[in-house]
Each structure stands twice: as C-alpha cells, then as structure tokens.
Amino acid sequence: MARAVCTRCERPLSICLCASLPAPVATATELLILQHPAEAGHAKNTATLLRLGLSRCRLLRGEHFDPAAWTGPRQAWLLYPGAATEPSAPATAERLLILLDGSWRQSRRLLHLNPALAALPRLALPPGPGGRYALRRAHRPGQLSTLEAGLLALQQMEGDEARFRPLWQAFDAFVAAGLRRAGRCPAPGLPGVPVVP
Image (tube, rainbow, N blue to C red; front, top):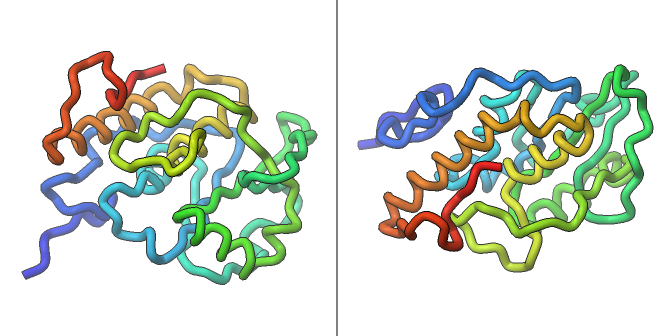
C-alpha cells in the first residue's frame, strides 16, 4: 500500500513540510528551477522548499526544455559554474534566474541537452563557507543544496539578506528534522548543526 502523500509539498504526510514553511517570500527576481526527473520525489530534495517558499518560483521537470520558458523581454541568468557575467539589468527590470536541480552529473546532462541554456549569461556564487545541508555529503568544498544555492544567488542579486531569513529558518528546521529521523542529532554548535544567518 502506497503512503499518503501531501499534494502541496509532495512528501509523505508523516514528514509534510507545509506547517514549517513561512508565507512565500516576495522577490523581484523570478526563479525557474529545471529539475532532472531523477531528483523528483527524493525526500532530501530542497527544490520543493524553494518552490513553496518564494512568491515567484516555477519548477519544471524533465530533460529537454522549451527555451520559451526563459526567453522574452526579461534578462535571464543561469546559476552554474563557469565564466560569470555580472548582472547588469537595472533592479527594476524583469529578471529571471535559472537553477538546475540534480546531481552534478544530471545538471551537466541538462546543460548538454539544452544548448539554449548554455548560451545564457552565467551567475556564479562568490566563494564562501561550506553548505549547511548536513543530510547529504558534499563531494567537494563549496557544494550546496539547491535551496542554499538559490537563496544565496537571490540575496546576491537583490541585496536583502534579512528578507530571506524565514526561508533559511524553514530550511534549518527541515535539516534538523531529517537528522533526528536518521538518529544523527549532534549537539548544538557542532559541525552539521544548522545555524540561522
């Protein structure tokens, strides 16, 4: 018998995220998450937190995407390692940030299968502290969860860290709950314990 699943957050009802989510955070920049199909349904996936936690966020699943999803009068950037282009559109202009959701191998595949994505200007995150997503192990320093990368990029583009604090707190609660379920509840202040910025 299949477990009952929340239709909003797509998680089993026993670990539904909805009660811990803040009201959607308003952003000037729209976030478009292109999710590899293999990531959908993973209990540790953070893209759903972004989709539900931001006022302007769309999530599309697949491997091939219609470029019409990101073309138009607005300026679009791809958040992906590579030669970065500093966002130059005025703060009042319509902006779109595209984030690939999947493993590094899956995201490289998405980029390869969608050449129109590879042609977009890139936004890169500045070097910073490691991620705080203790549910998954980073294979290299600086690797972040989808939520961490998306929020840090939006903060970089919009310059208002405090506005995103409720979503960071929901993320920290999500990580802490996952650690408790896995029997990995380190003492506060030790590595792996989320800290709200």
